Length: 229
Ligand code: CTP
Ligand code: MG
Image (cartoon, rainbow, N blue to C red; front, side, top):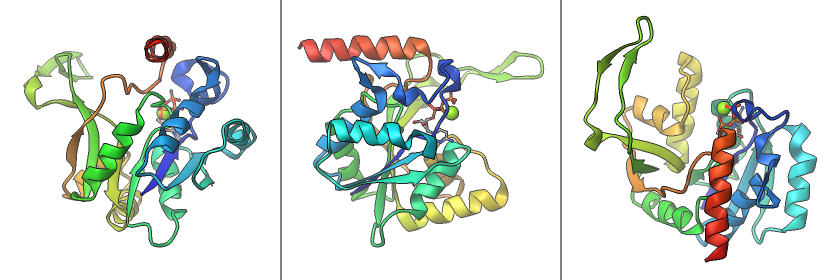
């Protein structure tokens, strides 16, 4: 199965002056952890890293330090995650029927999670790793900051990546999204807007998206615990 890794962001919420995926996490760049897990996943046979060309020298250095055992290609990123994934889809090799997409920023996903997602994707047109939300979620009206609704938590899931899709269908969804000006933060949303089914795969609580400095500190703790055991 083919895997695309969006890695072309700026890391603005991290407050760093460069791509957060190049920051150190337990003495290795964050992206090196993501790549290590993807490389160790048995079901993944090809990896496309979507990045900004200015970062490619650093990405190449990461690969040189730990050469992966499967083909890796670099794909030029866009201004938004949505555009980056769009570029990734165009760059998939001919014959790629299904694709997994995994944020470079989710550096703690395990190889087992990739393999479970790949397995589910053999039976479904779209899948998303997700975990039940722990917080009570409020829907708030931004004009007056008053709570409008409290959805039943039992029906709420926090979407993670990997997400996986039938390639032809996802390409259609992205094309339509561009035509209609839809702006989404994950690919499942495009699939859903087109009335296509997306199934939940149990994610991992430790599979956090490293977004802020606090997330980086938490990821460090999780890794220390993992490496120590
Ligand atoms: N991403 C991407 N192309 C973009 C923006 C984001 O490939 N134009 C990637 C990021 O590199 C990251 C993933 O999408 O692996 C999830 O995005 P996010 O966590 O928001 O990362 P950033 O966009 O870098 O962070 P921020 O939004 O704080 O600037
Ligand atoms: Mg972002």
